[in-house]
Image 1: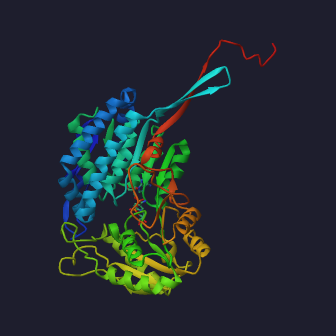
Image 2: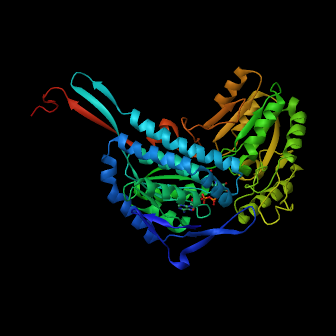
Length: 487
Ligand code: TXE
């Protein structure tokens, strides 16, 4: 597999010295190479997107929607192939990559439907003005994608951007560009007009920075780490470029003593170990009411130890490796710091070396107890299969602890009393929340959160608005002077 650039409707090969190896995190072997585009390539892509803008944005929404429906159909046809490559490239189990590809399809169909069925609105101002509000595309959008959900987040940004009439320059993660490459094969196949969508695989410092600093980019939509998000926002400030940032989290799962404990444990396991904890909305802090603490910890640790960790291509696997060796080493260093800070390691905490794991980047499901909110493992996003369990004694303490990090992405509360659930969720600063469930996420509803978790929302009607500019049009009903000035 070689990932090339796609600029102005043409495949472009990089120079030989601009290729980087792609590694399967389950076994450390090479699965292909990717182009590492230059700043010049990125500028060419931005130029092509600018040239294509007038025609694409002028198409009736239904015609743009027709392309999106065709794209969704082709993704569906190649679902198995895309999932397999995504698993080899990112490491996630097949059941996760299948779900991501299915949601990517759904996302293209959802925004095709939404753009065909929604419009602006009218207003009346006094007796003199009939007003209209229209939603227009923003222009050329730079979409910067992380490695943890490559095809999914590519779809979350691409589908609403194109539906709204923008043209795009997409930079996938330099580690996981394969599924985006296949998506661009599909764009080519369905005959998306030249320059409407451009693919520039490459590094953040070169391609990413060219996009974020460009005066010819009208919108930046980024998902990734909070530190990178700050750099992107600073670069965007120079040109007052519109930004959407979807960043990190340290999301709480709050369990009251009256909750069904087995149910809460089951959801809490999913919340942290899905995606090996490499998910922005991961429930990486569990807060349990003192009366249920012992039972919860016993059940949670017993089940965490039984999770089947292995290569994602193995149908039995429930949790895969971390995406690179360097990231695995960071996660292991964070775990060591937790032990040094005095937390108790209940299980995991090590690199796994089983027969089929020895060359991969596997970290065992890890649980810490006896933690407090001053510890770095309670405050910092680890982005691995590591969870901390704390106690609380009453509702207001649960809310205070839940809010005591710089992030505000997700939160869930488990309780037998729906009023308690509602009160607590209202008190928690987070954008994605659940009561007696951690199964959150639907293309129809906004995704994102406040504080250092970002700015703006993906998905749902809010996700479309991120790629649109509102315009008010005031139409005079009578040709009368204002008469504000006498002469
Ligand atoms: O992400 P980066 P990294 C968090 C998670 C993780 C940490 C670091 O905690 O451990 O971030 O991960 C591109 N200008 N999340 O370093 O750097 C980069 O090439 C423009 C949370 O892998 O944010 C890639 O395409 N672009 C998260 C994308 O940004 C730049 C998902 C994401 O990489 C750039 C991933 C620059 N200066 C990590 N520098 C989530 N919210 O889901 C890098 N990039």
